[in-house]
Length: 154
Image 1: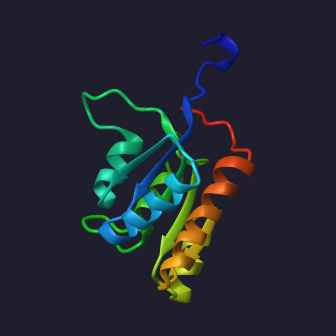
Image 2: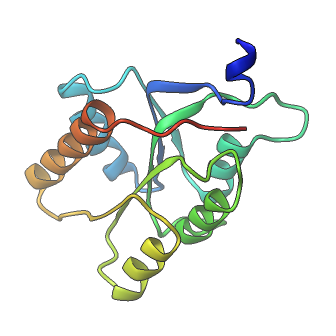
């Protein structure tokens, strides 16, 4: 790393972190991304605590590179998606990380809270199988291929 780039965290351009506890939703998202060859790696964590450990590290374990995008469910065990989002936005390493909420919640309070906390996008998961696949594909196309992400600083 050159001196000019010191402090910039490494980012994995085709890696996403999926924070989802519903195995059916995990399978659909992985299927959509795999079918459209959108990412090289999808890392899965199933609760908010694991998400924060993945992104902010654990004592004695080196930090891993940040994913290009975090797909975050709100209704998670241990630590809610809203608490995860708030923690990420308050931490210098992850304050600019792209976070897309994918949730079943249609509550206005959840929507407003997420945008108040700086979420990049809020998507309500459809119940229809094909619509769900199409949304997952479109999320990947936009956030992984079209969007230019910010620089990350550690």
